[in-house]
Amino acid sequence: MSVTPGSNGAQVMEPILRIQNISKAFGHVQALSGIELEVFPGEILALLGDNGAGKSTLIKILSGVYFPDQGKLRIKNRDVAIVGPRHAQALGIATVYQDLSLVDTRPVAHNIYLGREPRTFGLILNKSKMERDAAALLGKLKINLPSVSVDVEMLSGGQRQAVAIARAIAQGGDLLLLDEPWASLGVEQTHQVQQLMLDLRQHGKAVVLITHDLSNITAIADKIAVLRQGKLVAHVSSQATTQHEIISWITGAAPGRFQEESVSA
Image (cartoon, rainbow, N blue to C red; front, side, top):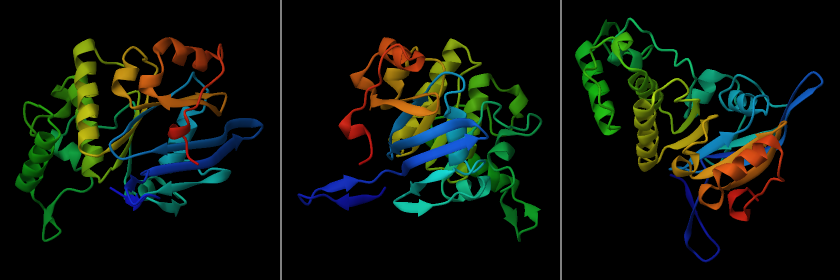
């Protein structure tokens, strides 16, 4: 966790991610225009907006799929130009897409360490170490599963989402980008995933959450950022707004609002 001395000598926490004047166009369509945002360790930022607002474009820029036309990104107080998904992952940015990209016919432990399985002498799969490490990680994250040896296809939707998030953490993710993490889940499974996100915050992980479900958003997120037609129209503390007001920003029925302490200087 990065901190710097403040003007009075007190330590000031540095954002894990700083988005500065990011813009992106596709032909004549301006997908993003001058986006400015910060995300801090141990913080959940809800990135909200209607279809076509620019949410997916911004997430793909952060995950290395797209390169911005202008602006810059700072990760852990260092300017970076993310040149691809593997580079984003190396920088500690892990993306969990809505389809999860899990291998249904492989066990939980294999999915968590897929492509990075521990091996003896670099050749022989060390299955026991992989399962021990997977069980330890799941225990740390308070994820309850029947076994790390069970195939993913046997798990519930909420459990599958938890495995995908655990894999992102195992890959070194300090900043997690979660795309509609409970879009197809029931009430109980949604609650489980939301609780996992709150637990991640206690571990100092930063989370950017994309969701269309606003029913409990102010209780889950620390800050709310709303995009509309490619522009950031609101960025406030979740405690300083309501679901009704958020909807008015998304639809354009009311002017946006910014809290001075929520936006970068």
